[in-house]
Image (cartoon, rainbow, N blue to C red; front, side):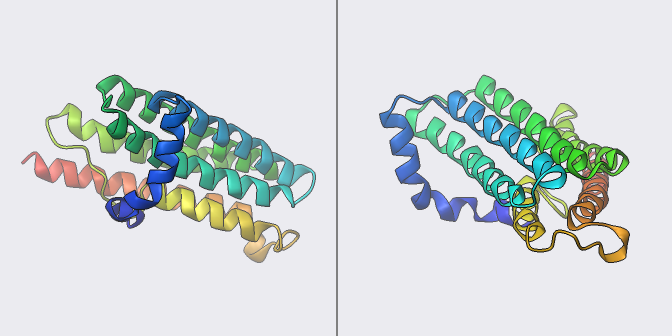
Length: 204
């Protein structure tokens, strides 16, 4: 996991968005809901990219980046408004998991490969589960491992942009989106196992 380490350094870039949302009366929870809306639209765009016109992949990638950006902004807004709470954290994490599921669902539905989608989404969900399950057994929340959510969204967004010019190619028998699902499945389960063994050893 790499991109999450840079969160402290991007706070100055968040200020205009945080102040803008605060000025129009947005709450952190409403920004979290807005971020989830971007994920739903991204899933639809990925579906259309695979089924209708590959230009939709560009829209999908843009929406994925918006989802990731808003996911950072909601926490900064909570700190700005001094309303950070356990309830807000719960809502944010629940919506993040649903966002992951619908985005991967859109990717899989677009190319009609639901088995790959199943492998990818279970890997992603287990990664997040192992991160929070550590808290349930008395440890700190675990964010480590090969690929975290920020990295994952960045990769999905970049591949989404590449999927438009590379549409129609199938290196190794998979489309670009197919290979993305293979990657998400592999690194998702690998990261989940990394978090499990880290937590297991920390309990000794």
